[in-house]
Length: 476
Image (cartoon, rainbow, N blue to C red; front, side, top):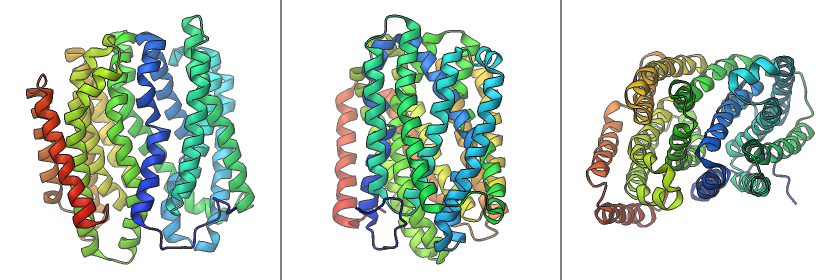
């Protein structure tokens, strides 16, 4: 049996096949939240679901800090480091992540009581938080490695295994819980333990292949790239989850946080699809950029823009009824947030074009600068808009900050990084953006007319199927 962590030397893998597995993997790993929302929202209740959402936010923060984003250098290393050194490089930089993780865990253990007070999570959940964060980072690291070397099938297997074990254990624990604390612990423990155990196994495989710990050359290549990415990734968390934390603090209402989180998890499905497509797009884009195939980049980028724009519009038109079926009536207020949240995720898709360009040129400090500025916009906007409009204010603040994120990175890539080499112009993005915004307005106008929305969505689906399958015969 072929070791999935042996580097793939066969460059003939089909982009369509890679896209298939790259889409299935994230959908199963992250999209499982969507399919289990009806179960967990009913079993936990809005208040407990809000607590779990806050825990998840802190878990994502700690994952970034513990791993110091060494995995974020894998795509760049694949371009700039010799192929025969790849395994040694991955092993060495993962050693760096383990070292920082141990230091962070020691600090958290020493300050566990004040940290519990800050996060409003009990000490037991803090322990799960450490295990979950470290395990999640290891899985993310291994996933990045497999994606960049076009081993999507192996990544798919890991996704299925992690998701299946996590959901199964969480459901078993939650259905046996008798108190609110037990419900929260069951849901959290169910996800923490499988991530931790599977992460350790993957770490062992990477070390077994690389057989390298400290290497000065690799660490000197990695650190200038990964350290700014910590700030970049924390800023991304602020962009995506600051609304949840500020809702909790400003409204002091766990139920409101639960309603907002339920809507966010449903809308997040379109972001999962984007992440899956981007996993396939980035290695392809980097290969074209390395060979300076500007015309091919223009052609394939146009196809990618059209594909995701139509997918976003179709999702926006259909999702309100899906939300009504999946989510308990106590969360019904979240339905009106869905169009705004979906446009926000479309802005993330647009921002990926300049940021992928910045990654290719190893400008991680510029990446951090743009994302940090957008995060500041998000915090300020949330502070004022949540006070004025509640949950809708939080959704609007997120949309405003993601628009700023795209604009900042587009300007950085155009003026500070590319110096004439940047592959995109604003006019390439405007038609899709205008179409998505118009679709959001249409969704509010046709809120009670589901037949019209579904008919438009079906027409878009037929158009996209014809375009991709029969005309292009390629996803990009």
